[in-house]
Amino acid sequence: MENVTINIVNTIGDVYGVEAEDGQKVFDLIIKAFQDGKKGILSFQNIEMLTTAFLNTAVGQLYNDYSEDFIKENLTVSEISESGKIALKRVVDTAKLYYKDPEALKRSIDEISGE
Amino acid sequence: MSKLSSINNTFESYQQLVSFYEANKKKIFEDVHIQLWSFFAANMSAALGAILDKFMSNLNDIHFDHISPQIETILLKNDFLTFYGKDRAVDTNNTTIKYQKLKPTDGKYFKNYVIEELMEGHIADLPKMSSGAKEKIVEAIYEIFVNAQMHSETMQIYTCGQFFPSKNKIEFTIVDIGIGFKEKINQRFNSKLSSIQAIEWAVQDKKTTKEGVSGGIGLAVLKEFVGMNKGKMQIISYDGFYQYDNNGEVSKNFIGQFPGTIVNLQFRTDDNNNYLLKSEIDINDIF
Image (cartoon, rainbow over all chains, first blue to last red; front, side, top):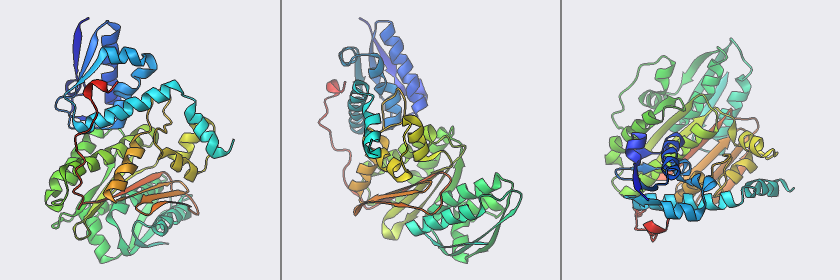
């Protein structure tokens, strides 16, 4: 299986990966790579700032379409900063929980409402 | 006539703004009079600007009947009054962070604004601050801006800030005139939460209204950072007031409503914590 590098800076045209809309561009490329049977390398080279909103759309929503095992097998990360790594890990862990139990959010609302 | 007096970042000050809005919100093609007395925290320009824009969208005329001289000086320096027919003043002390009105699509512009106003333009004001703390502050501000972009359904985003070098702190405020936490959450979950319940839910980790996309981390991350930095975060959304700082959480209801959401952040600039400590996360074990 061929590897394909997705350069985030080039994909979004910015060293700030902050907006959800830009995250979607990265997500679309990862999906394209997966659909073509390729393994993706997500390069964070030269990225200076990341928000969780960006990472949620870029990476988090992959867990809606693909299993944890598949993503682990087919996606790697390179040249990410320490703070970026922490944020990405948190986004990934949150996504895994979210897609395993999407009703948990509604339940947490019901608990507040006393229903 | 509406008199705003000693406006800073207290619940009572926000209540004054809410009452000012409530007293004038039904006016159409009329005159709205305002007086600013004794003190007005520069970052609150964002909240006042949002309210005045609501009035102007009803084609009302805004009249500043009185502005205390020291307030006028600061509101000229931060450009707020230039939106109301006054000439700009030079900020020789360089402690203001300019008042800005942005469209939700102005993300790239916001980036330049943050870099110029908050970081590069104020390097001398942040000598005690670690680079990690600076990065965390910019990150936090971005999370709030992006939240307003994604969730509020606002037409405009208002931002403003102020450095307080002698107190080692910085205030930054982001305001939208969108649907607010309560409406957003209740629409999504068909629930009946109050404004306070909605805010308290949203600041918890992993709580999101996005459908089909996980999230809800931004506010939680911000809250954690505010705790470590010994700063303060305030969220005002319609009739709900929420504050988190070293003393814990406080929630209160306003009499009346603000027409949107205010997020006010206070950071300590003498924070030399190293937030960039190497994590123990293995790059091969993220997914």
